[in-house]
Length: 237
Image 1 (cartoon, rainbow, N blue to C red):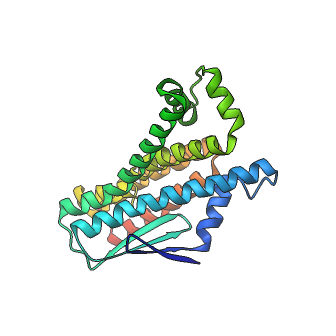
Image 2: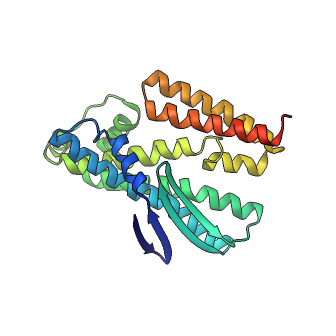
Image 3: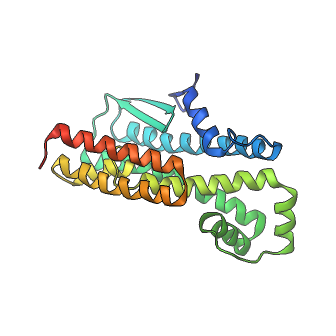
């Protein structure tokens, strides 16, 4: 268990957090030096990205609702608490949205760093390749940089990928993800929130199976089941 304070907010990182990231990085299934190096870089990028995401929640929550903030990084990501905080509907919306917003902002900062290193054309082309698999040509200087500084490029790639794709997934209307919590603010009754979540989570789980992404399939399959159980407790409508 790792504990420290950041911007006056207690942060706790549980052991399962590291194990989950090690699994996602592939470090638990491949033991080559290159794979281990990439695994450590991915864990670093994910830890920083998730922590920034939760700081977005916590700092905005303290600003808009008060209370005592705390951040916990655990097996499936992170949680930000604002115990004793009092939020208006608008305040809660901005507190929830600040998490993905902080992640997208961090991704934008990384993109600006890439523009400074590679220039706008190659930086945008590299981002398109990393995020969407697009094929583009690059200058000889960029190719040489990528080949000579693989650890740095791996860190940039991980930061871009994590903050974009995990941010987008987190905005899906699946409770208790941020998108599901935002849905809960505007959709009534509560059963409808879970119905929307079940459909969205099931679709993402099926997509994960189709792509061969076992973690995505298991995570969103679990979220679909969790929302189904919550809907049953509330009664069918």
